Amino acid sequence: MIAFLDGVLAGKTLASAFVNVGGVGFEVGMSQASLAKLPQAGERVTVYTHMQVRDDGMSLFGFLDMEEKALFEKLITVSGVGPKVALAALSSYAPAQLADLIAAQDVAAVQRIPGVGKKTASRIILELKGSLDEGLGGLFAQEAQLANQALEGAKEALLSMGFTTGEIDLALKGAPEDGTESSLLQYALKKLGA
Image 1 (cartoon, rainbow, N blue to C red):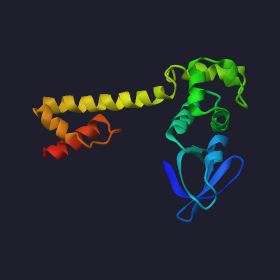
Image 2: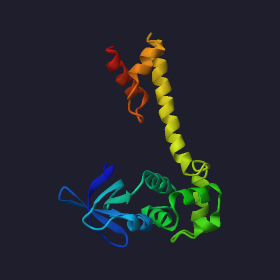
Image 3: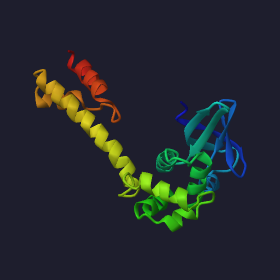
Image 4: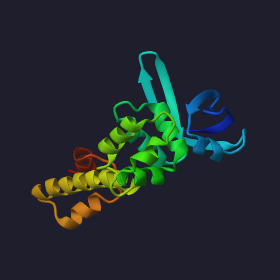
């Protein structure tokens, strides 16, 4: 997967940006809001990406911040919502504003997104309202909770192996924040020399 592109903006259209990374040009579909914030052609740019692979080809979608990317990835999980509708949603509303509208169950506002009717707006709200009850913070709170569970699991496993709390804290210092329980355990054991 391509997580991000760091290169030079070669140009843009109404729906895409072209990023030159080491002599290779990537076409990246983006929301109108992100396209408007891009620098001038020839300037350096970093774009976070989501790659979609289908039978008829691959598409790359780009975002200037992780909040927009996270919301895009949530939107495309909804039945009947594809990347074009998700980009239209992010072109119509800022990520935080859209998350708040979904959490508030405002069907009329979500229905104003081009390509979204009442039925699709209701489906978006029904399927996403739980994960967006606290707005955009809800998306990142879930990820932080999973990371915290992995860290606690690794600590418990190390305690059961006879290591002290002080040794464990020192061994886990600098561990990757997005690590799984087993990867955190391996990281700590290497530092402990076990």
